[in-house]
Length: 318
Ligand code: PLP
Image (cartoon, rainbow, N blue to C red; front, side):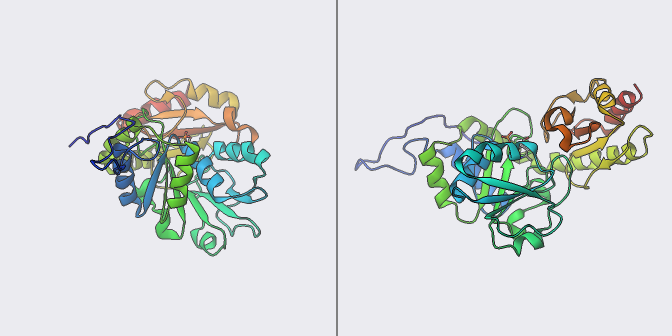
């Protein structure tokens, strides 16, 4: 059943002239509260929405840290997270990268992991992270709560780019933080105005109805595609952790990657991941030398597996 979408920014006070639960949308609003409830229930915690995944990242680090603090960021995690931290350097925030499959470095005030990392697709060592004194954030955008619930593995916060699989249809820009007690972050969100809009929250509610179906089907198809990629003579390394729909693989060089990404017909040459439409792109254009020149990232959608493979195979043979 469809949920109501309330776009109002204001609601009337009660008969005594006192504010009710909802009175001004920067503080809270019904559609957003409903979507936060639904996501919180899936993750086993309390959820707060933000205008994008990046907005969620910014709000979380600014609310937790102070000038001079250092974040240990998983190497090979989403490129934009490092860009965000770099942008915050002039306010005294530092970050160092580390191998998230190993123990995190000492002397840092926040651990930032990714499950699995995008586009290298390693899983974090949660035991080592939980044993570290710093709070632990896991960006589990790629895994989704279908496969991984960070709070159950010792994380203090789960973070999502809802723009990806949770929304699932490439039509909503939204982010989320899930934790056990988000009162401070909620106050920070209200006071800094990093507040979400109701329409994307409504699209999240709709997307959650089919999340498990979509993600399981994407996983099944991705497993088939990864296996066929491994057997293809033009493909070198194939990275696929066995969960969700994201694969990365290497062809010989940048020119080959460009040829493959521009030769598909069904798979759209575009960025992002987790949607119903399969998309593929060379990541070197964005990430530079931190990724191989021939690295292609493929996000598998809901199309037929054989049709996707036929498209990919003809592009690889192009
Ligand atoms: N985290 C991961 C793993 C991502 O892939 C992305 C976006 O690509 C983000 C965070 C940032 O999310 P948004 O684009 O919604 O700001």
